[in-house]
Length: 474
Image 1 (spheres, rainbow, N blue to C red):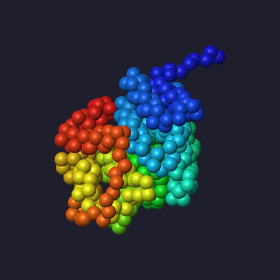
Image 2 (cartoon, rainbow, N blue to C red):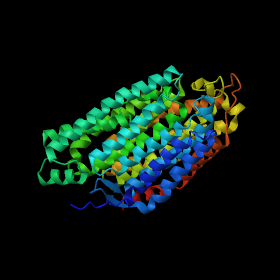
Image 3 (cartoon, rainbow, N blue to C red):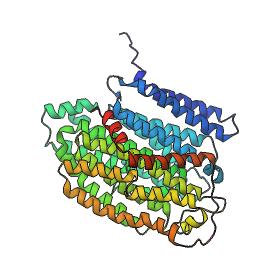
Image 4 (spheres, rainbow, N blue to C red):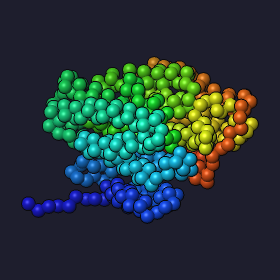
């Protein structure tokens, strides 16, 4: 039997990223200046981004699919890496964890996310998920001398392993039922054999929902997020709040919309209570937080609830609104964490909300940037956050879920309290002490990119929405 080499074109961005990440790992042994390693990391994802447009197609018998949908998510992952590296350079130096493997782990985690977005088979999906998760566990505990960082890594690892077990159990059940792990073949089998009311199919969908809910930090599978966000290095928290969440939504879209597309009514019934609980718990518990990283963790949980509305709405409009929301969320969330990093200096953590008192008087530019990001996270026009919520709510209304949107708007109104409380602290209170900002050209560039994106997309949202629609092929 003659061996035929599979077409490597669709997987070239991932191959290039893997090779360059391994090269950086070796180069770190000889390069003393870690800023050079950071620059090499940005170049690595730049090469992957350059190869992305020419990598469309399917390979390995349809197990790996590079299409517009996966390309959009890969764009989010690449932007996430670039912004994370920019905000990390000075921060990991202050935290005394300025090691080259930090950047390699970020690249390997991103490689796992890219595999997840392009998975045409449940086994490839699992491989990508584990590569992402194992890298993220190490990153969470990267400040080895800090007990909170160690605790964050341990909690993330234990609960992550628990979620992986759910996913594997769901995969084994769907394989037993259909005889395949190919996502398109599962869809065809369900339709052909009329399995809509099959209890095994329903149970496997519940198991998939549990596993993916953990990855996007949806209630009641969110318990790891506040502790991990607080304990992990702030730059890693920023990275995890966007990348793994986007990868989670990429696989939710691929599995639920494609494999289980014919039984949408059944899985929507599973996701609706999860979405309501996620929005409710995320926004209500955030009200009582005094640590800004924990507050942003609950905020991240609430935003996952909003994005689930787009999945529940289904159809292309719903998915396009999820894609555009995820991109906008990435910019505004990393921007907010970048301001938190600015307050971190030698001997001063800057993690408490009270540390922002009078910031507008001592550092007006930093306060103005935080104002933009808080307004966007709240959903106040003319920021990008308003347009993100507008399109996702509109898609849910068009799908007949007006009552669900009313609940979402009520919870969104609650969120204004804890976001605008930061603004009130900055602009309406006197500073207790003069905070020395920790700035660098890389951090300033990241803040400029995120603030500009939040304001420009807020004024011209059609560009992002059209980009998402093109990615979905309509």
